[in-house]
Amino acid sequence: MGVADSVIDLVGKTPLVELKSLSPKPGVRFFAKLEGQNPTGSIKDRIVVHLLRRARETGALQPGQPVVEASTGNTGVSLALFGRLLGHPVEVCVPESVYPEIEVLLRSFGARVRRIPRQAGIKTAYEAAQAIAREEGAYLLNQFGDAENAAAHYQGTGAEILADLERVDVFVAGLGTGGTITGAGRRLKEANPACKVVGVEPRLGVHVQGLHSLADGFIPPVLDESVLDAKILVGNRHAFSHARRAMLAEGIFGGISSGAVLHAAMRIAKRIARGNVVMIFADGGWKYLGTSLWEAEEEAGVDAADDPLDDVLWW
Image (cartoon, rainbow, N blue to C red; front, side, top):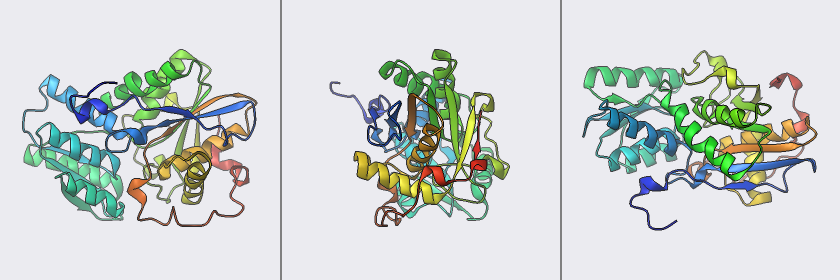
């Protein structure tokens, strides 16, 4: 690819790899988009760079102006790095439930961290970021509300998938801000109207890092639910188990949400005869080394077919 001018130029163009050993039947092919290959190790590099560039181009973000955002992890880390590279002080509002590695990375990249009580959740963190923007003159990145979040995935993630794979029959991605599902899902449906877009979210009351439950009452404005054909609800047990499965079977060191997405894809594959299933592995596993994920023995009896069918909201 030649010599890059900056780390910023390394965002996107992530590999799409076939997971040949993980599909449960011959007619169904699995592909994973490895977003952990981005500079800070997650898909959020795409939206942070896109949103910062757009804000600077339109004049909404002035040179040297502080930037604030609410995040449970990856977006904050991306903003801490790329905001700094572009000359903007960064403050991130994070719930106390985030993994310790996330806070270490935020501070290492020079961001100020404002901790929100554990029980308050991301909605309260978002409100805190809005208050900082109003009261201190900071620019709110607004990953939850800016339609350019979805545009980054329409122009980038979705287009890249189609450049690598002629036909996509099922697209599976985690529900966080809704930007990936909305933007990439819309692009894939334009190419193949029969493509089914499946969102993966945690069961209500369950914390799965990188995912957001719509049932908790906070529906990100970025999310266009009309793009969704189905949702699959997951818990930590299957997210951890399938992240380990991807590592042991395919050598892919994905994060916890990647395991959740793989679990969902395996459930879908048991219900279709054939087709190309593309998954978003949103980040790598490096940020979660402090968990028991990589040390626990494989859990006996964990299989995608064992879950209750009422956890699948099908098309």
